[in-house]
Length: 138
Image 1 (tube, rainbow, N blue to C red):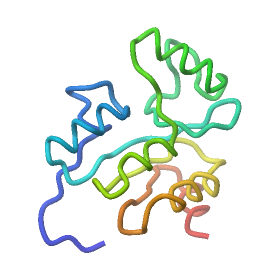
Image 2 (image 1 turned 90 degrees about the vertical axis):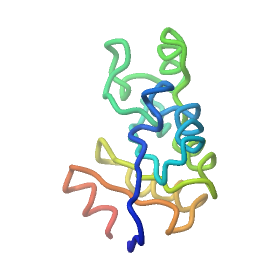
Image 3 (image 1 turned 90 degrees about the horizontal axis):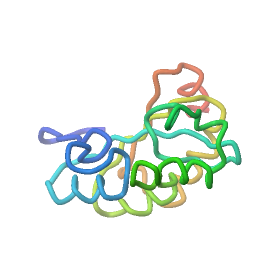
């Protein structure tokens, strides 16, 4: 990637104004003229890839919850957890997105969702996990 100016990244969307990693936080980041949104992905028990930073919500691990159960827990805090697909569809044509894999094991599935909706110049992916980077580069 080559940039011709500084890039302002909204961490988890405009998380100082809206609940982090939500469509509302993404919309606020766009309104604030950010250049990029950083978000995190995890996978639910029933295989839905969602936008969420922490590995748990209300003390319950995301990987042990179905998507419906995750939404029930999120509602207790008055927000909704978007799916990866909802997130990339929302940012399409509006803002660059930086997607961080928090876990290994669903790289191909996530990249397929991302590439179905975004062009290569509209996103990048990253992870602190070597096995994720290796799997994505294959």
